[in-house]
Length: 379
Image (cartoon, helix red, strand yellow):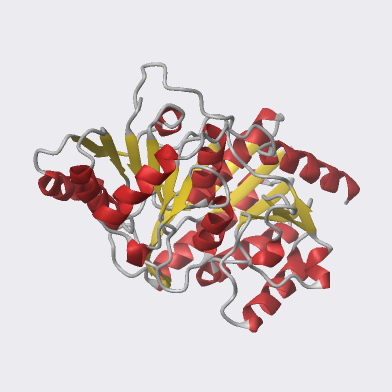
């Protein structure tokens, strides 16, 4: 079968990473997979087995997801947005999917509703219409107005055959973050958590004993890196590695290197072997996105979490609160973050009882394939 996944990551790369993991699972089950991405390219991510088509890329203006910027950093023009719609419709027409999956929409990406709806309408009118599913993480950004949830329900009812929820309902039911109507509840299919295979220790020992500091693929993590440099001065006997992502990574690395001075730390761009560095790391410092949480649970690495809570964002805080019940996790709010608080939190997690790596519950991608295939056969 032909499976098409449409995803646009606007801040960081978590949505794209999870969509690629899902796409690889379909490919491993002998599907031809086309992933259409509308965000800034993230070349560090693994795309093996998946054909990737890039729309004219967009990113958000920081945490303002209604202000969309093009690849040059300018506000996206109507023509630019229309070109994306045209390219997306052409992809649907040429690929003729049996399965169409939209990542996050209609529970988010409302600023891109025109292009998603155009693709959905186009797909439903193909000679052989695909089964249409939404793919969502464990915790969503709660709707700021009841009307947004109502509108999502309307779109689901009109276009969708189901919603894949990449969570365990015993751990994080969708109701934690989203009002689930009776109509929506009937469309939900819990897959378990979507994650790649558990990371294996780096064959060259990179990351051994280090404090690994990461903050996704965007620029919002710069305060975490600055606090890490300050904390490193208070913990001179530890080795540190800062992994910086985003289009402006080189400029930010230069700024951080100047701030670090002669401190003993490595500051470099994000690495594709990051997950392999985690199992033997001394500790991790990061935000608390979905993929990060999966990596930390699978590796057992002690971790300090600084959930992204700018503006009205609560998703990562809810997830971090859940993880904080486990050994070896400590949570710092962004307004509490400084060198001393980070150093104190690291001392707590590294002296806590060891947390064994979790091995069960991460096969959500393959379960999503099985659920989707079964739904396809019944329609």
